[in-house]
Length: 434
Image (tube, rainbow, N blue to C red; front, side, top):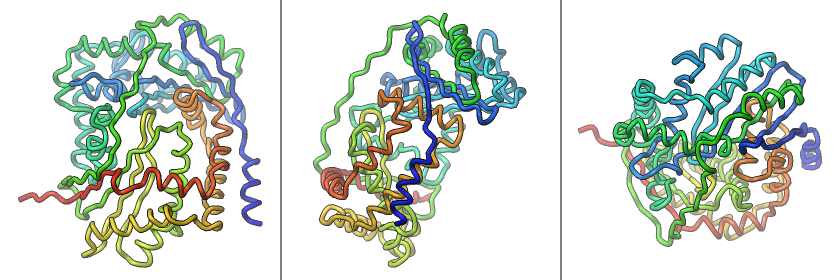
C-alpha cells in the first residue's frame, strides 16, 4: 500500500511550464513564469567546458568563469558583485567539462538589471591583462584550496582519476587546468577563446520566476537581440576512446589524508543513454542510505569501512561509475575491493528483490516530487535539459524513464559495464612526508 501511495504522490509534483524560442542571432530562450514569490532567476549556460580547450591551454573554460566577472564596457572593474548585492540579489557561476553556467537571483523588480548584466557579459566583456593577471592568482589559490591541499581533492575533482580513463578525450584533463598553461597563455589567446565560444549561438538564456512573459520578451529582445556572433556556431566531433579491456591498476598519493581509500572507476555511456539512468538505480541500491547493500554490509555488519560510496558521473560524451571505500583499522584495501566486487557480482548474478526494487523506485519518485524547489534550480535544469538532451520538457517527464527501469535492466547494465577487466583500480594512499 505504501508503494502505491508513494508512486501516486508524483502527481503532486508541480509541472514546470515554460516557453522557448530563438532570437535571430541563435540565442535560445526559455521562460518559466511562477508568480508565487517575488523572485526571479536569470541564467546563461554556454556550451563550452574544459573538453573544448586546445592542447597546452587547459583551464581556459574555468578561467573564463572567473574572468567574465571582471567587468564590462559599462560595469566598472570589480563592481559586479557590488551591483548585485545592492539590489538584494545573489549570483554565482560554475564550470564543468561540458558547459559554463552563470546566474543571478533578484527580487523580481530587478529582472531588467539581471538581463542587462548578462547581456553586458556576452556583448561587452573587458578582457585585459590586469584582469587576466588578477584571476590567474585567484585560480591558483582555488586550485591550492580545493585540490592540492584538500584531503581526497584529486578524487573529488577527478584529477587523479580521469587521466587514467581518458587518453584521447579532454575529459582526461583537469577542469581547473594547468597553472603552467595559464601562465604561458597570451592575452590574445584569451580574447580569441571568448570570441570563439561566448556567443549567442552557443548559449541558452533562462528566465524563471515572477515575470510577465510579454514584458520579459521585450526586454530580452532589447538587450540580447542586437548581440552579434563573433564566430560561427562551434561544431564538435566526439573523440572516441579505445575500450578498456584490462584492469588499469594505479597508486596515487595524497599528503593531506590520514585514511587511505580504495577506488574503482568504470567508463560508462554518456548522460543521454538510458543505461546511465539504470546506473543511478544501482547507486541507490549499493550506497543510497543506511539500508543500502554496501553500507549495511561493509559499515554496519562487518565494520570494514568508515564510508562507502557509489555513483554515476555522467557527461556529454562519456560517463563514469565511481565506487570507493575507506577502511577501518587494519582492513586492507584489497579486502575492501573484494567486498565491493562481491556486491557487484550479486547484482550481476541474481535479480534484486522486489522489495529493494520498490524502495529504489520510491526514492526516485520522492526526489522528483521534491525537485525544482528554487528558481535557480529550475533555471539550471531547463538550460541543462535543452543544451544536452535537446528536450527541455525532460524537467517534467524524466521520471518516466526511471519508472520504465526493470529489475532485469539493473542486472543487464551491471553485467555490461561493471566488470573487473573494464575499470580503473586505484589505491589512494597517504604520502610520506619524510
